[in-house]
Image 1: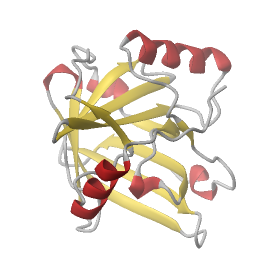
Image 2: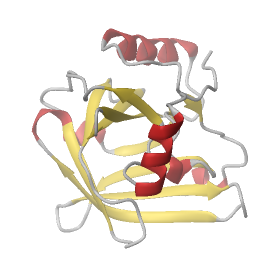
Image 3: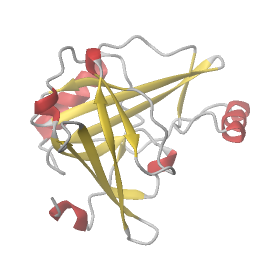
Image 4: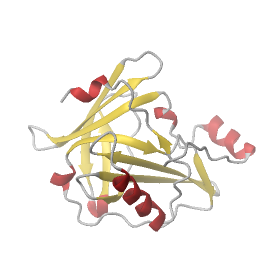
Length: 196
């Protein structure tokens, strides 16, 4: 069972990070980004389709969201596209983001959103996936004498089996990535899930 915990950074560091808007992730650690192993020879076609956010590290841009769904597809111009939908916990309005998806070597990808207010593009790393049940997405940003980690767990069905959960938790632990900071995503009243 995943616990809802938040990591605590020293107050001076939090003030520096918050005031300078250096990072949107809340899991701050000392030193620099660790070496991690990504998926090699990613099967781009198998990665396409719908994914649902199951859990993640606390992320400022996602704090007031629920029912986050990600649809990846090959567009009419033979370019990879993404359509994200989510429900706001503040006003229960569905938000939609669209953009272009670029796959890179060694299990990395980047999303460039069409909307100017969306999150800026940066490289995400796919740590692990079986394509049919789950994917672990990771990003890391070096700061001054520290680094910020981002982890997202996406699944093919909103409420996966315990076997699937145990598998991706084991994958994280195998790479020495903490599971303590994972926050569950609410799957309540997900009206956007019924739309293809």
